[in-house]
Amino acid sequence: MNLKRWLADLRYSARHTWARAGLWACAAAAVLAFVVLAFWWPAQREQAALEDKIISKRRTLIQAQQADELSSAYARAHKDVALLGKKLQHAATQSQLVESFARLARKHGVKIVSETYEEGRAAGAQPMLNAELSVQGNYPALRDFLHELSSLPTWSEVQEVRLESVQGAATQKGRIRVMTYRHAPAERSKPS
Image (cartoon, rainbow, N blue to C red; front, side, top):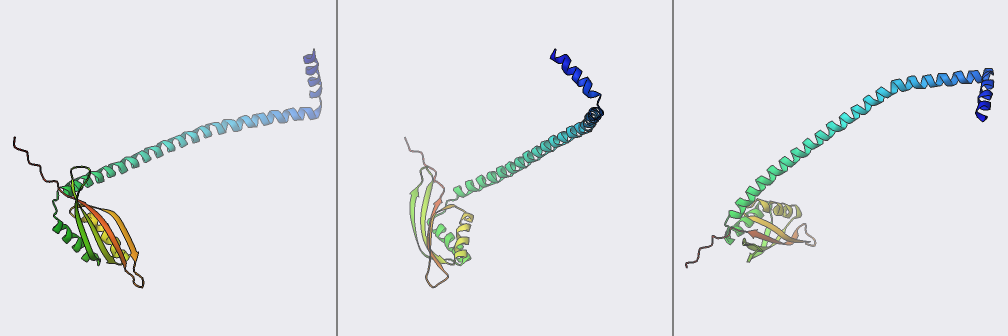
């Protein structure tokens, strides 16, 4: 019963000129919204497709860059392993090591005040020679000296560096501990 009454009230209200104008305005707004939706929807779908395509191309580009970086890192590692193998095969004596350190120090203007050497063995079978150098020079020269230790024909690692400024002078004094791995001698088979 309420529905019939509501429909009757609605028909009665629709006779009023303002109500008709409102209905026409609502209908026009609905048509306009439908037209806008009809134009917007395909454009929005096209934009979403373009964004997906851009994301896909960006992902492909990033993967290609990562593959290139990985390839170059692998090539560097391969080269470094070959160099490390060559350095480990170098059978440097203590006198050759002393001469190498002295040549490197002269090149960079670093003075080696004193040096001590001690034979040692790493956890593995690779023999090593521990060196402790007392050096003196300006900071850039010491830095370059330390940096170029890796260019020696042996595998030399800097274990510890202690530097202190000399008061009233532009020089630094320091102690550098260097561990040098050397070629392991071939073990002779024991006679039975």
